[in-house]
Image 1 (cartoon, protein in one colour):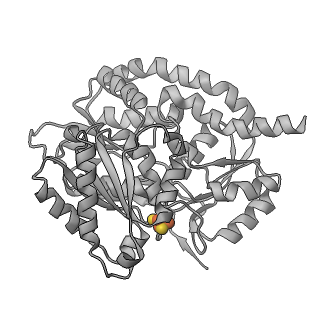
Image 2 (tube, rainbow, N blue to C red):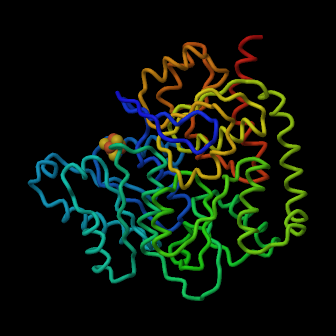
Length: 424
Ligand code: SF4
């Protein structure tokens, strides 16, 4: 274990403490569950072991009656020993997918711990297969491996690879790109708001289908919808996009600030902005009244898991009145957190990375009213009488924007309600 202290740019605030030690997080393969729902003509082919296959099958348990658009090409012992040509097997499986699923336009080759250990070159495989299918099917490789990653990094890694293949926007006209996969219903709500504000064209990345992936160029203004896209942001930056620093669209305040960043970049008059956002903002604030009554004054701790911890802590503190204990994040990215950090209260303890046992000891000592953590940690804490919330739920549930503000707060009231019922 090692601890180091990172600099903080918040005057008078506590520094960010870096922790290194035992970690307990899901790997990036988990993100296939929401990514395959988002990109509706994509297939995710994991090149991995039976463990990888079990992980995505159990994470996607609810999909059992649908024909899933993901599979695992299981590496056998012979492959792992380097005796068989895993590339031949990969070509065979890709051909099978294409024959069975003519609607598929993109195949993601997703590497895992085992394929990375044997150094299977999926970048080369993607290039070779792309040539073989002559542009009819796009092949993109990325890593979902669990070595030193966390589950939301799967999306970051996927979009980073995809960024290199986006068409070039040479229109010379400004366009807004919203990056990070959002449920379609939330995307539609944001699209309507941007239209009412007079901002356009607006592209969502990733798009719902392969042939609608957005163009990118020096006039692209980038607004992040998800806080875990550090590498994607840098990849889009290399293609010319300019990041609009903004808090993430959680709650009434976060959503307003996020929309305002785009409005300012596109020269929307402040009066028009207020006029368009007044009604949905008021609705969001009304929806927050009831959960706020239950959450105000309650203490919450975040264990590092999703990279959504800082923006969620900001929302729960500022809009729901919760008191923040430790806020852990698996990675702290200065660029993507620049607008969030100043909104956190001074002195809050922020940790980056994980050293599980001392972190759990601190939770046990502090006994917060609620701990947001990974699924594997939740049960032991519950058995000790501590209330928990699985952080992975926050990725699977629509939580962004004005219309979801009440639902987002509601996710945190539920464990407390259950506690009250148990105590009656
Ligand atoms: S990628 Fe690695 S961590 Fe993830 S399921 Fe496969 S073996 Fe496990």
